Length: 212
Image 1 (cartoon, helix red, strand yellow):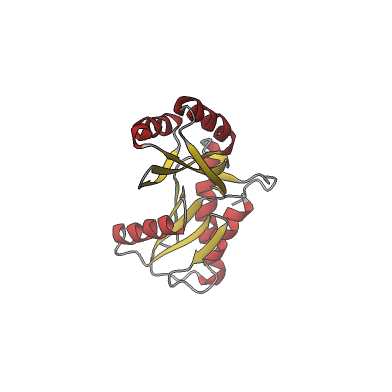
Image 2 (spheres, rainbow, N blue to C red):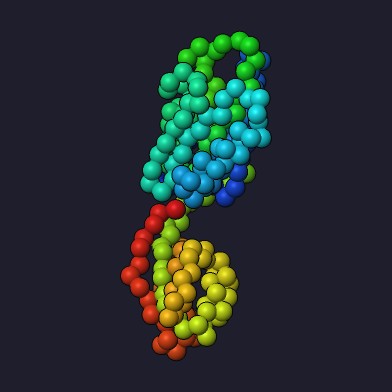
């Protein structure tokens, strides 16, 4: 199973993509999906284990937040999670979780067979993503934080929602401090709009850049 190897720009997925293989009576259910971070990935893996209680293995690989992880979930070391991770790296993916649920069919595949099976399960899902236009360039995200009087909180929240930015945190003290994340190329114009509408009553705090 081969994918294009000339992609260097970081990519992510617009939604989950799936594959299903049957090899010597074992079923391999592959999925690659966008995730924000390791915590979200682990929660997803837990969901899959609960949804497939009779599966032999739920193996996974993660590239998110500049970090990587791989888990063989009981398969021989290096035969599942690492090959899955290699496929994702080959496609310059970021902010993505790959999982493969295996139902054992009674026939052992050997180390080489396992590597091929887990590699193909992820590669086929990504081929589907490519054909469906679900591989998209990764947008650099920035985090912004501003403090506003209570009277402006509702208006700022509405502006954030209209911008389709992600509201990360709200702290109520002497003023309201809101932390949000949005695409870097939209940040400057969004700040300017809030400054204009707030008539100088907003205070912006230092920005923190995030890729994701």
